[in-house]
Length: 370
Image (cartoon, rainbow, N blue to C red; front, side):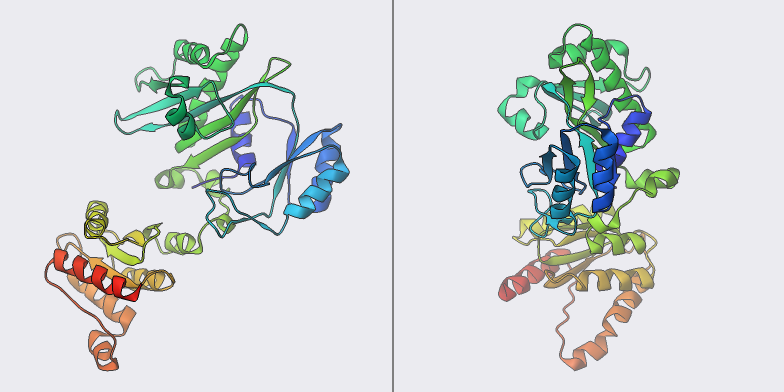
């Protein structure tokens, strides 16, 4: 689950990270009042959407006074911000963050995530901030430094100070950098994150390290432990199908293809997607109905995929050893009103004994419709 920048900053602030003075606003009057509460300008007005690349897309703008803050907010509210990460449909802007604009000397990157190749939490620091870390890794890998957090002793002050030095911090700022790293790690662990990053982490002309931007992704599987974080969810920023899948308790990930997939089991699901890709197909989704899928869940899964306009065919692959076959059959019958009725109505439903044949046929049929 993603949360907004201002929400991530509030969490980081509670863990000791400095953030700019600011206030989230839901209307024009509140935006102007937020600027007046901060005091003297300049200010920064930031659209709160679940997508990166806001600056280049016009979602982050500078204002000199509260009146200009109001005009910028007026231009943002009720529109959709299109960024490289939002997709062509963009993300709706229903709230903005008004902050003080700080005098910046240098920007850095600091993030915490999970390195699945070594099975550990890692802290990533970079001497270049304000841009995507993946871009820096490709262009100048020597600027990116990584430290693994050992489960037995956690993230140590020594590791924090070394990372700060590697990032180019000097003098008394080294200790501040180590403290920010430790706070980010604590935030990551306390909130059961899959990602927590500060980009950029700014060194101001006054010698302070401040989180100018923040991003936190919460592990969905841990949300049952964090009702306070679940309350931060903004479904307006999510794909309606993702919201519906969540409501129906289906493990669903939207993809760009045109072949809808229903499976039972994550491993079987990945194998199914790989098989379709191997034979030249493009999956439209990953949908795991789970080991204990009922006919209602299968019916709901069918309805979810049929509501997706890009889905031209649906491929079902189930393992009968972990799910009752009759549950799947009844779910399909309920969803399609029965095979016999459909056959008599002229609708084209094909079944195959072997997974390979089914995959090749659905690809062939979809290509014919392209």
